[in-house]
Every structure is written in structure tokens, then in C-alpha cells.
Length: 149
Image (cartoon, rainbow, N blue to C red; front, side, top):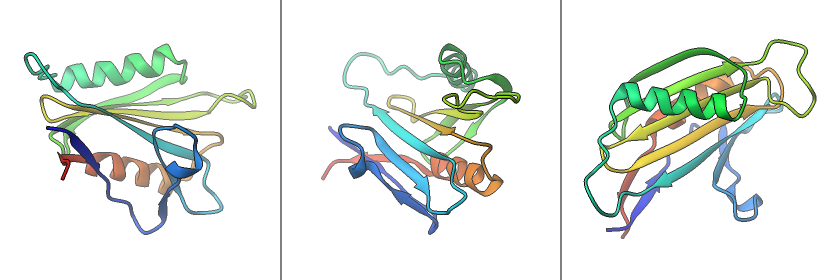
């Protein structure tokens, strides 16, 4: 059965997906201090055995993605429960000086209900405000999937 993304946004965040041609779901902090965007992609399990990734595997996926795409030095990785089920996340930071076209901060999440996976990442073009990173994390952990009606 096809699934749809359930998205909750704090009052100070906006969905800017329609402004990006053929892009993933893209969300931004609606504040003049905003530095980045949170992008969300859904991978729906359709056949075969469910993958059932463990919390450690979800953290490893997040770390590998950030490392493969050179998000910077790994600061921390965490796993736990979220609205969808389980998540793993990794946070990266580049020490100054940072090249103009290289984000100094990134965070990656992999969330699962045991079968389906939501992947999202937040990249900041400048040092992000704590409120922005906390908002991105809150949104990521509230993501869910439901049957398409």
C-alpha cells in the first residue's frame, strides 16, 4: 500500500519544496538568521523481507553518509525512539576556516518503522543558530508515514 509522509512543522518553519524543481521535501527555518535547509526522502519497502535495521545500523548509515559526502568531522552519533519507530543520527562540523561553497555544519538522520526508511539531512551554509538545529532535529524525530488515502 503506498505511503505518504506525515510532516509536522513548528510555527517558525516553512515548507519550501515547491520552490525547488524536482527536489525532495525541503524545509527551512523562517527567520532572518536561517542558514540551511532540512531535506527529507522516503524509501518505501515494497517486497521481500523487511530490512529491520538496528539502532546501531541506523547510526552507521548516518555516519557513512556524512563521511562519504565529506560533511566534516564527526561530532557525535545518537540513536533512539522517534514517532516513526527508531532513528540514528550523526552530526558533523568543519573547523574554520571553511571554504565558501562547503557547509560548516551537517546532520544526517535515518528513521525506520522496521520496513520503510526516512532519510533526511540538514546542511547549513554558515554556523547555524541553536534554535535552527534544534528545530531541524525536532522535525526529523516527528516524521511519520501513513497509508495514502
